[in-house]
Image 1 (cartoon, rainbow, N blue to C red):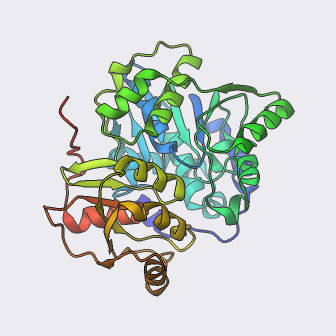
Image 2 (cartoon, one colour; image 1 turned 45 degrees about the vertical axis):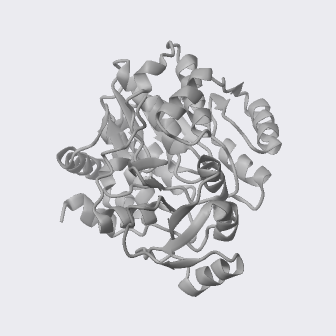
Length: 387
């Protein structure tokens, strides 16, 4: 077992109570050991991973040494730290871990949460980068990624999710997320007017520059070429609005060979995987598959609005196959079955793939991880439509 894996395994992934003062305090104590690149912060509910990767990939393709920090990972921790077109290797990851352990005191190291530690670890890995795209983990105002000074914040679509930490309605959730903005923000596509209202209020209060994203016509064409749901055109447009803000020209040809792991990714002619887990993600997939009937390979965590997710997807579901996942937070089987019966969705338990049927694997990162491991599909062989 690697030293990093052993260390991270000693920290819980989920906390009932979060000490929001811990990360800012420790950062102030150790920041002189870091040289920060230009940081673009990504906050929102849906589309953070893809928006961040579109921007990071674009900057990398223009010759800028670029890092992208995202979470969670699907198969391997290394996915969280991407530099110049590829995930970090084990050797560099272990080296960064040893460097960070020398910077931190034993007390500081013990206090940091899993996500707080890995955020600092990423910044060690990114020490030679010119740009870093930093994806918030949960929220914005109190997120570990907010302690670093940044150049710009990109705000993806904000919806209902993580209510126990962020608030019960859109206004509360948007306020918690947008309070993390520092200098300037570009507001991406939003479903709720309340988000725009909150953004204007916070921008005025904090003296922050507020811009609305530019909808590029080429973004929709690229979305179609990559066989992604239409909603991804908003994410591409937001990323390219960030490119323009940074003072660079936009050339969509640089994005034509990008691959997004687990984001509406077609890994076989009849199989699509998606790590989404909330109603917004379900709606984009419903629109993508509308007019078809697909078999849904599914499971969910108990804090997700899975009833609403299943109601949205029901019109396109031929049959649902429950896949067992390894998480203490997985919804109890009898509760999931009761909801499926109530919604009159036919279901069984996942066993194998029928080559004659079309499948969507969806519900959480855990679902996609378990499916790929159990079926041994090679996720790197993305199937793109012939142009």
